[in-house]
Image (cartoon, rainbow, N blue to C red; front, side, top):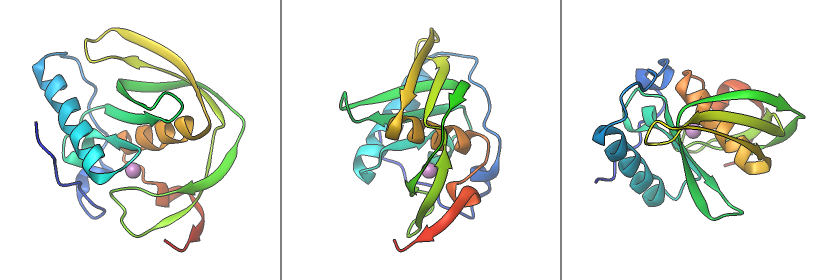
Length: 152
Ligand code: CO
C-alpha cells in the first residue's frame, strides 16, 4: 500500500474518460487500498482513481452518518431528483472552492471490489460526493459546473 501524489489540474488524465473495470482481481484491491490511504492522508471526503493516475472507473466516498468510506466500481446514477447548491472543492484543484448545483437524492448502481452488483440511495453530502467523483470518471471537474466562486 502507498500514499500517492494527487494529480492536479493541468494533467490530461483528469480530462480523460476512465475505463470500465472488467477484471476484479488483486489489482483492484490494491488500487482501492492506495486510494483509501491517499484520501486519509489528504483528509479528503472522496477520491476517483484518475486522481492518483489510474484511468479506471473506481471511486471512494465518505459517508458521514456511518463514518465509513464506500468503495464503488463502475458507478452509475440510475435516477436523480431535487437540486441543492452548496460549496465544493477538490484535491485536484487546490485553492479553489465554490457553489455547485447537484441532485439532492440519487440512486446509485455499481459493483463492489469483488465484482458483485450493488445499488443504494444517497442524499445530502454523500450524494454530492458521489456525483463529484463520478464526474471525475468522465473527465469533468467541479470548476466546469461552478455557479459562483468563493474565497478558499
Ligand atoms: Co474532485
